[in-house]
Image (tube, rainbow, N blue to C red; front, side):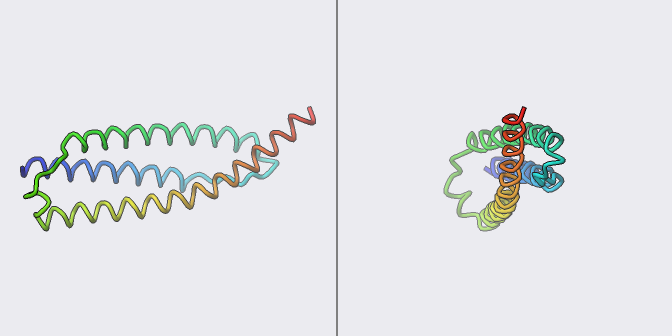
Length: 125
C-alpha cells in the first residue's frame, strides 16, 4: 500500500499546484470595471475565464485519479505521517480556495460594472 499512498500524495501535490497556478493567474488579473477600459477588460475577462475552465478541467482529472485510488485501507488511514500529510494538503487547498473566493467576489463586482457599461452602450447605439 506504500505505492498507493505515495501516488495519492503526489496527486494531492499536483492538485495543490494547479490550484496555486489558478490563484496566481487570478491575482495577475486586475479588473476595474472602469468605463474607459470596458472593451479591453471585457475581452480580458473572457480570456481569463477560458483559462479558469482549463484549470478546473485539470483539477477534475486529478480528482478522478485520486478517486480511483480510494478507498485507502485502514492501515493507510492509521498511518499518522500519511494522515498528517493529507490533512496538510487539505488545509493548504482550503486556504487557496478561500483566497480565490475573495478574488472572485472582486472580479464579479468588476464584471457587473463591465456588463452595465456594455448594456448602456448597446442601448445608446
